[in-house]
Amino acid sequence: MARIEARGLSKRFGDKRAVHDVSFTVEPGRVTGFLGPNGSGKSTTMRLMLGLDLGEGETRFDGRTYRELEDPVRRVGALLDSGAFHPRRSARHHLRMVARGAGLPPARADEVLEQVGLRAVADRPPKGFSLGMSQRLGLACALVGSPDTLLLDEPANGMDPQGMRWLRGFLERYAAEGNTVFVSSHLLADLESFAEHVVVIGQGRLIADCALAAFMAEHGSQRVRVRAAEPELLAAAVEDAGGAVSERDGGRFTVTGLDVTAVAEVAAARRLLVTELVAVSGSLEEAFLNASAASVEYEPDAGRIGAAR
Image (cartoon, rainbow, N blue to C red):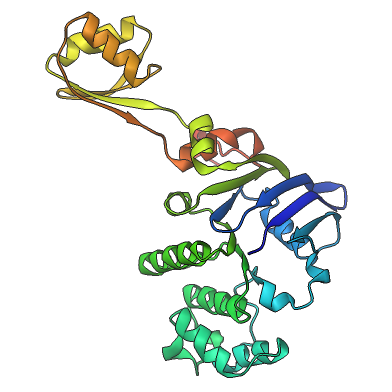
Protein backbone atom coordinates (compact mmCIF):
# COMPACT_ATOMS: atom_id res chain seq x y z
CA MET A 1 0.00 0.00 0.00
CA ALA A 2 1.28 3.46 -0.89
CA ARG A 3 0.13 6.88 0.24
CA ILE A 4 0.89 9.84 -2.02
CA GLU A 5 1.59 13.22 -0.45
CA ALA A 6 2.09 16.14 -2.84
CA ARG A 7 3.25 19.31 -1.13
CA GLY A 8 3.77 22.79 -2.57
CA LEU A 9 4.00 21.77 -6.23
CA SER A 10 4.75 24.80 -8.39
CA LYS A 11 5.97 25.32 -11.95
CA ARG A 12 6.61 28.30 -14.22
CA PHE A 13 6.99 28.43 -17.98
CA GLY A 14 8.62 31.81 -18.56
CA ASP A 15 6.37 34.40 -16.95
CA LYS A 16 3.38 32.03 -16.81
CA ARG A 17 2.76 30.11 -13.59
CA ALA A 18 1.33 26.77 -14.69
CA VAL A 19 1.05 25.24 -11.20
CA HIS A 20 0.91 27.29 -8.00
CA ASP A 21 1.55 25.76 -4.56
CA VAL A 22 -0.63 22.67 -5.07
CA SER A 23 -0.84 20.21 -2.17
CA PHE A 24 -3.04 17.13 -1.79
CA THR A 25 -3.06 13.55 -0.51
CA VAL A 26 -4.02 10.36 -2.35
CA GLU A 27 -4.92 7.41 -0.14
CA PRO A 28 -4.67 3.71 -1.07
CA GLY A 29 -7.68 1.48 -1.48
CA ARG A 30 -9.76 3.88 -3.59
CA VAL A 31 -9.77 5.62 -6.97
CA THR A 32 -8.97 9.35 -6.76
CA GLY A 33 -10.03 11.43 -9.75
CA PHE A 34 -7.95 14.42 -10.86
CA LEU A 35 -10.09 17.12 -12.48
CA GLY A 36 -9.48 20.50 -14.02
CA PRO A 37 -10.38 22.57 -17.12
CA ASN A 38 -8.12 22.43 -20.17
CA GLY A 39 -4.88 24.22 -19.39
CA SER A 40 -5.41 23.98 -15.64
CA GLY A 41 -2.07 22.26 -15.01
CA LYS A 42 -3.14 18.62 -14.55
CA SER A 43 -0.49 17.06 -16.79
CA THR A 44 2.22 19.39 -15.48
CA THR A 45 1.27 18.46 -11.92
CA MET A 46 1.60 14.75 -12.69
CA ARG A 47 4.99 15.31 -14.30
CA LEU A 48 6.11 17.25 -11.24
CA MET A 49 4.97 14.36 -9.04
CA LEU A 50 7.32 12.02 -10.89
CA GLY A 51 10.20 14.48 -11.14
CA LEU A 52 9.93 14.67 -14.93
CA ASP A 53 9.63 18.47 -14.82
CA LEU A 54 11.78 20.75 -12.69
CA GLY A 55 9.82 22.90 -10.29
CA GLU A 56 9.17 23.58 -6.64
CA GLY A 57 7.71 21.28 -3.99
CA GLU A 58 7.87 17.52 -3.78
CA THR A 59 5.75 14.39 -3.89
CA ARG A 60 6.38 11.44 -1.59
CA PHE A 61 5.25 7.88 -2.14
CA ASP A 62 5.16 6.31 1.31
CA GLY A 63 7.65 8.91 2.49
CA ARG A 64 10.04 8.80 -0.48
CA THR A 65 10.27 10.84 -3.65
CA TYR A 66 10.13 8.95 -6.92
CA ARG A 67 13.88 9.38 -7.40
CA GLU A 68 14.51 7.87 -3.97
CA LEU A 69 12.53 4.69 -4.63
CA GLU A 70 14.84 1.68 -4.79
CA ASP A 71 12.73 -0.13 -7.38
CA PRO A 72 10.41 2.51 -8.92
CA VAL A 73 8.88 0.26 -11.61
CA ARG A 74 7.61 -2.06 -8.90
CA ARG A 75 6.25 0.83 -6.83
CA VAL A 76 4.78 3.37 -9.27
CA GLY A 77 3.25 2.74 -12.69
CA ALA A 78 2.59 5.80 -14.84
CA LEU A 79 0.77 6.47 -18.10
CA LEU A 80 1.36 10.07 -19.18
CA ASP A 81 1.80 9.64 -22.94
CA SER A 82 -0.03 6.86 -24.77
CA GLY A 83 2.16 7.27 -27.86
CA ALA A 84 5.56 6.70 -26.25
CA PHE A 85 6.43 3.56 -28.27
CA HIS A 86 8.77 2.60 -31.05
CA PRO A 87 6.44 2.58 -34.08
CA ARG A 88 7.86 -0.64 -35.60
CA ARG A 89 8.70 -2.73 -32.55
CA SER A 90 5.85 -5.10 -31.69
CA ALA A 91 3.81 -4.61 -28.54
CA ARG A 92 5.31 -7.79 -27.07
CA HIS A 93 8.90 -6.74 -27.80
CA HIS A 94 8.30 -3.29 -26.38
CA LEU A 95 6.97 -4.75 -23.14
CA ARG A 96 9.81 -7.28 -22.95
CA MET A 97 12.22 -4.36 -23.17
CA VAL A 98 10.40 -2.61 -20.31
CA ALA A 99 10.38 -5.84 -18.28
CA ARG A 100 14.08 -6.43 -18.83
CA GLY A 101 14.88 -2.88 -17.73
CA ALA A 102 12.99 -3.60 -14.50
CA GLY A 103 14.79 -6.89 -13.93
CA LEU A 104 11.65 -8.92 -14.64
CA PRO A 105 11.35 -12.08 -16.79
CA PRO A 106 10.25 -11.69 -20.44
CA ALA A 107 7.11 -13.71 -19.66
CA ARG A 108 5.79 -10.71 -17.77
CA ALA A 109 5.12 -9.04 -21.14
CA ASP A 110 2.56 -11.67 -22.11
CA GLU A 111 0.95 -11.52 -18.67
CA VAL A 112 0.23 -7.79 -18.86
CA LEU A 113 -0.86 -8.02 -22.50
CA GLU A 114 -3.44 -10.56 -21.38
CA GLN A 115 -4.38 -8.33 -18.46
CA VAL A 116 -5.23 -5.35 -20.70
CA GLY A 117 -6.83 -7.38 -23.49
CA LEU A 118 -4.09 -7.03 -26.14
CA ARG A 119 -2.87 -10.64 -26.36
CA ALA A 120 -4.38 -11.03 -29.85
CA VAL A 121 -2.31 -8.13 -31.23
CA ALA A 122 0.89 -8.80 -29.29
CA ASP A 123 2.97 -9.21 -32.46
CA ARG A 124 1.68 -6.09 -34.17
CA PRO A 125 3.58 -2.76 -33.99
CA PRO A 126 1.79 0.11 -32.20
CA LYS A 127 2.03 2.19 -35.38
CA GLY A 128 -1.22 0.59 -36.53
CA PHE A 129 -3.01 0.75 -33.17
CA SER A 130 -6.07 2.86 -32.55
CA LEU A 131 -5.85 5.45 -29.78
CA GLY A 132 -7.80 3.16 -27.47
CA MET A 133 -5.40 0.26 -28.13
CA SER A 134 -2.43 2.57 -27.54
CA GLN A 135 -3.94 3.53 -24.20
CA ARG A 136 -4.18 -0.15 -23.25
CA LEU A 137 -0.56 -0.69 -24.24
CA GLY A 138 0.48 2.32 -22.15
CA LEU A 139 -1.42 0.85 -19.21
CA ALA A 140 0.33 -2.48 -19.78
CA CYS A 141 3.69 -0.70 -19.49
CA ALA A 142 2.57 0.88 -16.24
CA LEU A 143 1.57 -2.55 -14.90
CA VAL A 144 4.76 -4.43 -15.77
CA GLY A 145 6.20 -4.13 -12.28
CA SER A 146 2.87 -4.90 -10.51
CA PRO A 147 3.12 -1.51 -8.75
CA ASP A 148 1.07 -0.51 -5.73
CA THR A 149 0.50 2.96 -7.22
CA LEU A 150 -0.90 4.01 -10.62
CA LEU A 151 -0.71 7.56 -12.03
CA LEU A 152 -2.77 7.75 -15.21
CA ASP A 153 -3.29 10.86 -17.35
CA GLU A 154 -6.52 10.61 -19.39
CA PRO A 155 -6.33 6.79 -19.84
CA ALA A 156 -9.83 6.58 -21.34
CA ASN A 157 -9.04 8.87 -24.29
CA GLY A 158 -10.00 7.14 -27.52
CA MET A 159 -11.64 4.14 -25.87
CA ASP A 160 -15.03 2.93 -27.06
CA PRO A 161 -17.85 2.35 -24.53
CA GLN A 162 -16.78 -1.27 -24.02
CA GLY A 163 -13.20 -0.19 -23.40
CA MET A 164 -14.28 2.48 -20.93
CA ARG A 165 -16.40 -0.04 -19.06
CA TRP A 166 -13.46 -2.44 -18.91
CA LEU A 167 -11.11 0.31 -17.68
CA ARG A 168 -13.57 1.41 -15.01
CA GLY A 169 -13.90 -2.13 -13.67
CA PHE A 170 -10.16 -2.73 -13.83
CA LEU A 171 -9.31 0.41 -11.85
CA GLU A 172 -11.99 -0.33 -9.27
CA ARG A 173 -10.59 -3.82 -8.72
CA TYR A 174 -6.99 -2.57 -8.63
CA ALA A 175 -7.85 -0.04 -5.94
CA ALA A 176 -9.94 -2.57 -4.00
CA GLU A 177 -6.81 -4.72 -3.64
CA GLY A 178 -5.29 -1.95 -1.51
CA ASN A 179 -3.47 -0.12 -4.29
CA THR A 180 -3.42 3.64 -4.93
CA VAL A 181 -5.03 4.90 -8.15
CA PHE A 182 -4.74 8.56 -9.23
CA VAL A 183 -6.39 9.19 -12.60
CA SER A 184 -7.13 12.37 -14.54
CA SER A 185 -10.09 12.42 -16.88
CA HIS A 186 -12.40 14.83 -18.68
CA LEU A 187 -15.07 12.08 -18.96
CA LEU A 188 -16.84 13.20 -15.83
CA ALA A 189 -19.95 11.04 -16.10
CA ASP A 190 -17.75 7.96 -16.29
CA LEU A 191 -15.46 9.08 -13.48
CA GLU A 192 -18.46 9.80 -11.28
CA SER A 193 -19.40 6.12 -11.38
CA PHE A 194 -16.21 4.79 -9.80
CA ALA A 195 -14.10 7.52 -8.16
CA GLU A 196 -14.48 7.96 -4.40
CA HIS A 197 -12.30 11.04 -3.96
CA VAL A 198 -11.45 14.01 -6.17
CA VAL A 199 -8.62 16.51 -6.46
CA VAL A 200 -9.69 19.56 -8.50
CA ILE A 201 -7.45 22.34 -9.81
CA GLY A 202 -8.07 25.45 -11.88
CA GLN A 203 -5.51 27.83 -13.37
CA GLY A 204 -2.83 25.88 -11.54
CA ARG A 205 -4.39 26.31 -8.10
CA LEU A 206 -6.08 23.76 -5.88
CA ILE A 207 -9.87 24.05 -5.78
CA ALA A 208 -10.79 20.89 -3.86
CA ASP A 209 -9.31 17.79 -2.25
CA CYS A 210 -12.23 15.87 -0.77
CA ALA A 211 -14.62 12.95 -1.07
CA LEU A 212 -16.59 12.89 -4.32
CA ALA A 213 -19.89 13.01 -2.44
CA ALA A 214 -18.77 16.06 -0.44
CA PHE A 215 -17.64 17.87 -3.60
CA MET A 216 -20.97 17.25 -5.33
CA ALA A 217 -22.93 18.28 -2.25
CA GLU A 218 -21.01 21.56 -1.96
CA HIS A 219 -20.92 22.57 -5.62
CA GLY A 220 -23.87 20.73 -7.19
CA SER A 221 -27.50 21.81 -7.02
CA GLN A 222 -29.93 19.79 -4.95
CA ARG A 223 -33.35 19.24 -6.49
CA VAL A 224 -36.56 17.58 -5.34
CA ARG A 225 -38.69 15.60 -7.76
CA VAL A 226 -42.38 15.77 -6.88
CA ARG A 227 -45.52 14.03 -8.10
CA ALA A 228 -48.84 15.19 -6.67
CA ALA A 229 -52.55 14.59 -7.12
CA GLU A 230 -53.05 18.35 -7.59
CA PRO A 231 -49.70 19.47 -9.03
CA GLU A 232 -50.70 23.04 -9.90
CA LEU A 233 -51.89 23.77 -6.40
CA LEU A 234 -48.77 22.26 -4.81
CA ALA A 235 -46.45 24.04 -7.28
CA ALA A 236 -48.04 27.38 -6.42
CA ALA A 237 -47.71 26.65 -2.69
CA VAL A 238 -44.05 25.69 -3.13
CA GLU A 239 -43.35 28.97 -4.96
CA ASP A 240 -45.11 30.90 -2.19
CA ALA A 241 -42.73 29.19 0.27
CA GLY A 242 -39.67 30.37 -1.67
CA GLY A 243 -39.02 27.37 -3.92
CA ALA A 244 -38.53 27.44 -7.70
CA VAL A 245 -40.55 25.05 -9.86
CA SER A 246 -39.39 23.72 -13.23
CA GLU A 247 -39.64 20.69 -15.52
CA ARG A 248 -43.42 20.48 -15.25
CA ASP A 249 -44.69 17.27 -16.84
CA GLY A 250 -48.28 16.29 -16.11
CA GLY A 251 -48.45 15.53 -12.41
CA ARG A 252 -44.69 15.88 -11.88
CA PHE A 253 -42.38 18.83 -11.42
CA THR A 254 -38.95 19.66 -9.99
CA VAL A 255 -38.23 21.97 -7.06
CA THR A 256 -35.02 23.85 -6.27
CA GLY A 257 -34.46 26.10 -3.27
CA LEU A 258 -36.30 23.82 -0.83
CA ASP A 259 -35.29 20.41 0.47
CA VAL A 260 -37.48 17.31 0.74
CA THR A 261 -38.60 18.10 4.29
CA ALA A 262 -39.63 21.64 3.37
CA VAL A 263 -41.67 20.46 0.36
CA ALA A 264 -43.36 17.81 2.50
CA GLU A 265 -44.25 20.44 5.12
CA VAL A 266 -45.76 22.71 2.44
CA ALA A 267 -47.88 19.82 1.12
CA ALA A 268 -49.01 18.84 4.63
CA ALA A 269 -49.93 22.42 5.53
CA ARG A 270 -52.16 22.66 2.42
CA ARG A 271 -53.43 19.06 2.86
CA LEU A 272 -52.29 18.17 -0.65
CA LEU A 273 -51.63 14.53 -1.53
CA VAL A 274 -48.04 13.77 -2.61
CA THR A 275 -47.38 10.45 -4.37
CA GLU A 276 -43.65 10.93 -5.05
CA LEU A 277 -41.04 12.98 -3.22
CA VAL A 278 -37.39 12.28 -4.11
CA ALA A 279 -34.18 14.24 -3.49
CA VAL A 280 -32.06 14.34 -6.66
CA SER A 281 -28.39 15.30 -6.52
CA GLY A 282 -26.72 17.15 -9.35
CA SER A 283 -24.12 15.44 -11.54
CA LEU A 284 -20.36 15.59 -11.15
CA GLU A 285 -20.25 17.60 -14.40
CA GLU A 286 -22.57 20.23 -12.93
CA ALA A 287 -20.57 20.40 -9.69
CA PHE A 288 -17.30 20.63 -11.62
CA LEU A 289 -18.57 23.43 -13.85
CA ASN A 290 -19.79 25.38 -10.84
CA ALA A 291 -16.54 24.91 -8.92
CA SER A 292 -14.27 25.75 -11.86
CA ALA A 293 -16.36 28.55 -13.43
CA ALA A 294 -13.77 31.18 -12.52
CA SER A 295 -10.83 29.03 -13.66
CA VAL A 296 -11.42 28.52 -17.39
CA GLU A 297 -8.88 29.92 -19.83
CA TYR A 298 -11.56 31.33 -22.13
CA GLU A 299 -15.32 31.52 -22.43
CA PRO A 300 -16.79 31.00 -25.93
CA ASP A 301 -19.22 33.65 -27.09
CA ALA A 302 -22.22 31.62 -28.23
CA GLY A 303 -23.85 34.73 -29.62
CA ARG A 304 -21.16 35.09 -32.26
CA ILE A 305 -21.56 31.61 -33.78
CA GLY A 306 -22.14 32.01 -37.46
CA ALA A 307 -21.56 35.77 -37.36
CA ALA A 308 -20.38 37.47 -40.52
CA ARG A 309 -16.63 37.85 -40.87
